[in-house]
Image (cartoon, rainbow, N blue to C red; front, side, top):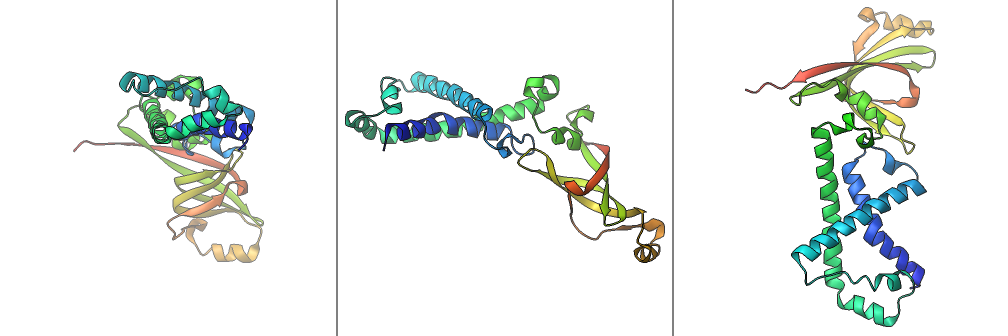
Length: 248
């Protein structure tokens, strides 16, 4: 294995993986869409930066609670360049501690990311500080969390979605259950429940005659979920219902 290959493998193991796990735990898909986008320099640099910080914390913790184990920084330049047999033999003698340390570090990264996310959301710090705001704008629009006044409240999102099918326009109304993003961070699909459909404009006279048999041209759809592709949506309106928990 060449020196470049060793260096890339070590960078991925020591920095990219811890930083990536931390970011994924802190920013799951419903809060951020960074991991759906194509990799670019900014994303790699950010992940690498988090990984370096986590590695520093891991080394400090090891030195504090297990001083017999330490990181030999003198070996790192050789490993990242062109390690010889002497360096590789030293590494092979300590494979179990190295593997155990990195396994614990990856777990630590994920736990830290999850804890930080819960702290930010529970204290609503993302609403107060722009740097902590998640980059998925649809999360704030669809969740309605900006309307919450107390931690004991929750929001139900009711949507009226206007869709054009052939020459007819329909409004689908129901509670938002979920949504999906594409790799560019745009909404790709929404899921509605308890759905009603209403015709608001019709040009197909034969189809319209059938629909007139339904009162107000509106009827329930008997399905658990209705999936609507976002690119077929002309516009939509949202009503937020505030639900307050009652301690009983």
